[in-house]
Every structure is written in structure tokens, then in C-alpha cells.
Image (cartoon, rainbow, N blue to C red):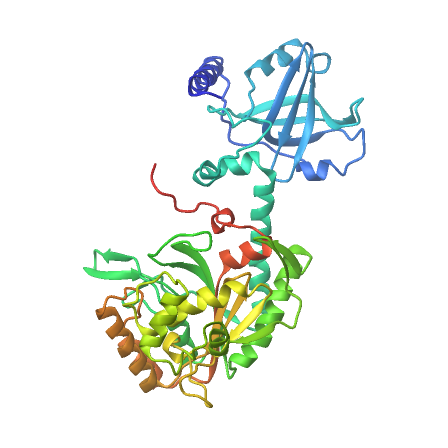
Length: 484
């Protein structure tokens, strides 16, 4: 529909509203009592009477003394038939006031047309909401991707697959929560505004608290407050909540996303890997009914057991250097040799991780645990007892995408303070994603935190992979968009 056509259509609909109001008819009544949702009607016997349903008109066509429409509610779509012989001349005449997009309530009986289509023969109907704007082209739905993201409500109206995807996402979150609840984890809520952002390598958003006259940060992770709860005596905790990172967007990254983090006392990263395997398998099976999916051209199978790949050894296999023992110059040479696009002025840990992402992570297709990362890229993870340069850390990778990160938590306050100090030096050198010193968290650690395993995952990204969707904005209802 062209812009001129759209304007004319809107004027026509506005005139209908005006005319109805002049007749004393409210085009926006408050309530309508239904007997069934449409998916329930589809299971009823033919001839069932006194069916009352309501929904949006998706198509309408008038043919003399007969009119057909497709009515859609939150559960499905059904055809309805208006017959002048049934309704009477005046009631049938009122149909001219109805347009595609309007909400109506109808009552009637169930029958099948000569073509075999299940249909409600309407004996009474009521306009519930007059739509003033026409819906997108009726046969093709809304296809423009940017417009779909900007006007998600139109995407949901016209594209059944979009609605189905977000119903699956709701089920997915429910299954995540249920699994943790069954394992005796306590769900908690922690602050979204923090004096010191921590728990991740990310640039935060800054805001201002007018009453207290202080600057605060939107949280970049859930980690440090959840660890404070472990210090406080809880042994299994989790939160599902929004976090905010003021960094680049991509098909895998958003500045605002839904994070899950959970912590379990007296476990280490080996226990964590066993738990995560079963956790992912359970929520995948319950949400999608399968352990297999197609993601970015790869056939993925979450069936256990998953492969384990040593981080340092995998980089050495691809580059010939041991990133723990190599000099800074050797790491920079490897960065250049393998055409890794990064700022070579970043700290050693960041350069190592950029090298890993280019030469190792992209080649990991099936669900894989990448284990034993260097301490230099793991400022909050416990050191390995066998090698103090290695952290007891693992990340989950599928098709080159990280879909989980966990480790044996560092509970030595002196070691943690030293790691924070190293991060502060990196910030001063220009690394905006390096972590800040959190003196309050160090003080809390000094009271003692039990041995603990912790895990974090962006649920939007995990759902994206399991659902086989190639962009994270497809699985977020209202992604942030650049202004037109």
C-alpha cells in the first residue's frame, strides 16, 4: 500500500468511527465475554451452538448477501461466515463498517463449508475495536526486517512464526527456572544500579541518582552481588535479569540482554560441567522436543557427552605458541600473522583472548567445553592447583558462539585484590572494558566465601542457538534500534 493509499484508508476509517459515534455506537467498548478461545473451537463437534469468540479480522470479503472473514485470537485462526438470511438486512449491512485489523466478538454455530473449511456461522456480532491504520499486505505478512524489529506488534499480528517463536521463548525461560528450582536453587533479585560495575569485561552505562546526587552504573553482570549472598550463607542462588553493556551490536550481541547466573557452594568447575551438560539437555528437550537444531548452516546435536578442549593447547596447535609462556611480542606477532583485528595496545589477556576467538573458537561446531583458560583472561576465577597461571574455568561453545561461561570462583581476597589492581592498570592504559576495583566486594570476601562454582549465560543468545535463529534481535521482542 502506497503512502497516499494509506492516508486515504486512515481517513476512511476515521470517518467510520465518527459516523458510529454519531449513531450512539461505541467503537471501543470495554468488555466482551467469550465462551471459547479459537483453538478450543477447532476441537468442538460440528453443529455446536452458542459459541462466542473474539479476535482480530485478518481478511474480510463481502459477496452479495454473504461475507467471510478470518478471525485471529491469541490461540489461532478460524473462518467466520456472515449471512444476510441469518443476521437480517440491517445487521448484515453493518458489515461495511468492518475492516481488516478490527477486533470483533461473534457468536454462532460451527459448520463446514462446501470446501470443507471449519467455520462459525455468525448469528450476532459486535465491533470491539476499530483499527484506524491498515495492516501490512495481507498475503505476505511483514517481511522488511528492520520494520519488523521497529514495529514488533505488526510482526506478531501478521507472522505466525514470530508468535510461535516467542511462545517458545517463554516456555524456554520457564524450563530454565524450573530446572534450577528443582535442584534447590533459591531465586533472588539484586540491584540493577551499582556504585561499582563488575563481574565482566564490559563498558557500562552511566546514570545519575538525583536524590543522592551520585553517579551510578547499570549492572554489566550479576556476579559480585550473588557472590555476596554466598558469603552471607546461601548455598545455591540464581537470578534471571537484565544486564547492560555499552558496547558493539552484532548478530550475537545486544547492549541490553537477559542474563542467567547461578552459584553453588562446595562445587568446582568440574562439577559445573556435569551440571551444565544436563541442564542444557533438559531445557532443550523440554522446550523443543529434540536435542538437535540447525544453526548458521550447521547441524547441532546437544547429546551428551560434550567434547573438552584445552584453551592453551588449542591455541598452540593453531599458532605454534604457548600463550602462557610466550612473551608479549610473540603474542603480538601471532595476532598480526593471523590477521586478528584488534588494538594491539590492549593488555596481554585481551590479546590472547582475541587470538583464541579467531583461530580456535570459530572452528568449534558441536557443543564443546573449552577449559583451563589463562588467569590473565579470567580475573574472577580460581587458579589451578597444578598450574597457578591457569584458571579453573570453562566456556561452552557451539558453532563458534559462546553460550556459557563458568568457573571455580576465586575466594582468596588477597589474590582477588591483586587481580583487580591489574585490571585498574589496564583501564588507566585505555581499556574501557577492564574491571574496576571493588573494595566493598574485597571486604566481603575477607569474611570468607565457601568453595563455589558459578556460571553465567546470556539467555537470549542460548535461545537463539537452540531455536536455530541466526540473529539475536529475532528473539528479543523490542530490540533497541538506531533512530531513523
